[in-house]
Image 1 (cartoon, rainbow, N blue to C red):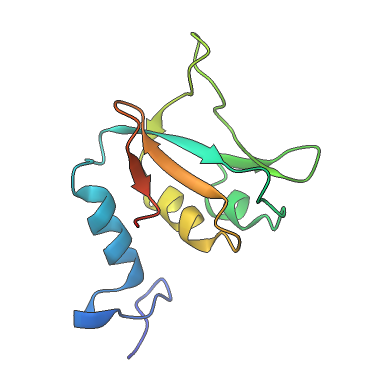
Image 2: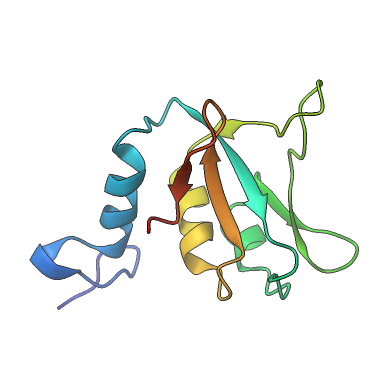
Length: 114
């Protein structure tokens, strides 16, 4: 099995891991629906993979741990942003699974897929 251009190994049926995540995320969630980035800071080890993969959405704070760039909206609610391939990859690349994307509209889990 040869990896795709992004280096993902094909899954069963020839789909890549990125395809599987994109398909899971694209099911009830469109690319136009905003998502909220959540970081479980008790799990984060500060590897920086997320900040390198999705620098417009995630950054390392002064404490060396990941944090969403858009932490809250004007009303104090978590800020939504556009679902991008970079965000999906950041969730996939987190070595300790500290990242999650949730729908900004109804709170359902978008990624990682279960």
